[in-house]
Each structure stands twice: as C-alpha cells, then as structure tokens.
Image (cartoon, rainbow, N blue to C red):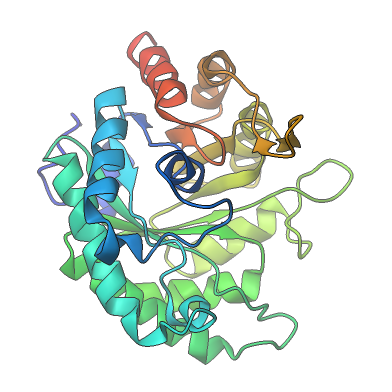
Length: 300
C-alpha cells in the first residue's frame, strides 16, 4: 500500500504500509529553541504554539512521514506534579492540533502518551487511575486530529497494560506501545525487568496495533531488539526510535548526544531486515538524523 497520510489509519492499513521514517527527539530540540534543560515543555502547546508547529514542520521538511505530538507528559498524573492536572485534555488536544498543522497533510500524526511518572508495580498509583488518565488523553488526541496513538517509553508492564486499556477505551484510533530496554547484562530488559517477550505479550493481549522500542540506548542497539521481537513471534508492525548514543557531559557540564546522522543511516538496512516498519530517533536526534534515515529508506 502506498503512503497516504490524508487517509484515515486502521490497524489493517498500518500492517500494509511500507517502512516509514518517523521524527526525532522533541525535548532536546525544544531546548535548542529556548527550553531549560529538563523543562517540561507540554504547556508550550498553549503558551508558545508557534514553536511547536515550527518543530513539527522542521521534521516534515527533513523527511519524516510520521511525527509525534508534544504531549509526552500531558497525562493528569504527571501534570499534577506541576499543578496542572486539570489542563490535561486542553494541553493534549492542542498538541495534536499543532502537530497536525505542522504536518500539513504530508505526514501522519501519532499522539504521544508517556509514563504516568509513578510505578504501578510498586503500588505508587492505582492501575485504574492510570487507565483513566490514558483514556482522557487518548480522547483529546483524537479530538485534536491525531491519526494514531503511541504509548512511549514503557518500562512497567502493569502500567503499559493499564495505559493500553485506557487509550483503546478513550479513542477508536490505532494504539501502539513502545518499551525502553536499557537494563540487564545484555541491555534487553526494561528497568522493571521485562523482556522483549514480556513486552510483546502485553501488546498482543491488549490489542495493540503495533509494538516496539524507543529511548534507553543508541540506534545501533535497535536491530537486535527488533530481531528479538520477531524471534518472540511478533506479527505486529515494529516501531524503532533509538537515541543518538548515550548521554554524555561536555566540558561545560551540558548533556550531549554524540551519535551522528551516519549512525542512523547505517542502522536502517539492519532494521529493515529485522522487520522494522517505523524508524526514527529519540533523545539527542534532530532533523539531520531524520534526513539520513529518510535517505536510507528511499535508497533501499
């Protein structure tokens, strides 16, 4: 099936799509646009919307065929830490609409839902509360025009299960789930000990439309993760968004990611061979890295 971001997505269409180029980091790019290191930028959807549209447009110009939304921290549990829990739907709806505006019909918009910031497995939050927060956010993403939803950077399978239930209840869009594997001797476990097979079981049982990994490691580690998903029997489209290497401190004490666009270009053939459908960048990656991915995809 050809790439047509103006056509509504379904799980069936997702399965039939060719491999697509996804955008890069939002947080580290927004820092370049004036955010303080570590600043939670989701309120910019209301306070500085022009910058969100600008970044979305920049990624589309770089070749991204899927862009995300500036809503990673926009669930009411995470926002409560900043006294903004009641703004979850408003911030999320605006984030989807801004990415949609930036995409201008040239890319799909996948609405980002991140972790609640509390650990379900440790009893810090009730799964029902996480589910409700995800349902609220997913509904707002759909209202803002998102084409699909991605539950990102998951480490806790119990939280992922709750988020998946909530997101699917909150909207009729395809919902995918992406885990972060950065622990264990082979760096193939989540922080809470879940394996790739565990992650796949959660995604499959919960009715996810796609599954994969993001963050936690450099892009060079992601072909092995993609292969592990396939070896575990994954039949879902695979999502792969690796960091631009691991974070380091420069001479000024500033966090930097040193992997070049060439590292992403070099990873594309292996990722494709492992069955990856969506290939993009996470922390530290920017438009140049995404341009390299798109060029490698176009040359396949």
